[in-house]
Image (cartoon, rainbow, N blue to C red):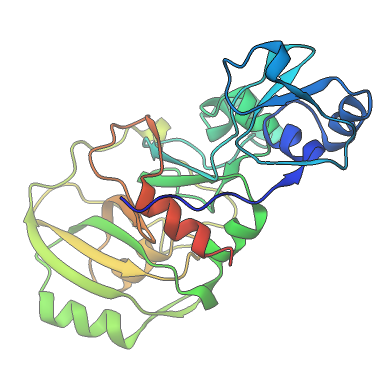
Length: 289
């Protein structure tokens, strides 16, 4: 493996905030009070630790830091990978008007420390969609992962009604499909026969909101032939994959995202997190340059 590049130094108050120690103003005061010491490794004895003189002092983001002599948590990752289950909202907190419904959301799965660091979901997956969703530490990176001009690919596998004609569907998706939000294109990778969805959802599991269109609300037929459609899109409009496939004559009954840029879902279990692999981290960092 090629050696990793040394990370640039950052202000101590920012590094502390990124680790969930407190808000930027709180960590400024902590550093100002000279309560932070630094060492090259977590097991360093007191005599090998250097006291930070103030909030403007710069340190490596991965340094071993101590608050009042106690080791602080390691730096939060730039990105986290999560396998979102079905029927989980891609928000950190549900709207107050739905509180009585006790709907599941991403704010319930991310650790308190990472939430304090400001980690947040990169875009969203529909309530009834499963698969890969990223949590980001940097707003700039989030913007670059999502902006259509960046063309970051998102790969999905959709189980659809009917026996899809691969060549016909490929041409339709390439030409662009009209929806109520505009015309969108996609790259079809393959179509394979499918046994259909694992199971039809119970009535109380389905969720529609004020933005749902008639395209979303089409009656789902869970009987008959089904196909698995693997495709790539570079935009993330609301329920876009479902809409374009429905308008091609193949309503989606199950949808899973398997890739976002160079980050893949792989064999990550449903409801589990993982860190980025070295090559994925290198790609993510390249987006910030």
